[in-house]
Length: 129
Image (cartoon, rainbow, N blue to C red):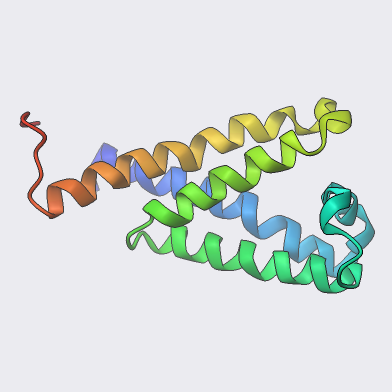
């Protein structure tokens, strides 16, 4: 296995872990996680429904990224979700500052996969790598 493949796999595993841990932990301790939802999304459905629906989305994103198959869109979604958590919880920045670093991982995956998709479709952008 070459270094690029190992690096890519490491980024995918790191992102998947960041998206699999919260929904798994929320099964045993849901109230540790519900507070990260901004007030404007709470109250429309019961907290448990909101939490577990979001958890299912996190699991789907994690498994899709882990699969390595066309991961541009789930990587963009993962980046947006992590940034959204930070933006909508400014009072928790002392804990959530790490999410900015974690968001860099799926962002890097999105950029790498975007380049891979362009090459796969035959767009070189005028430069050859």
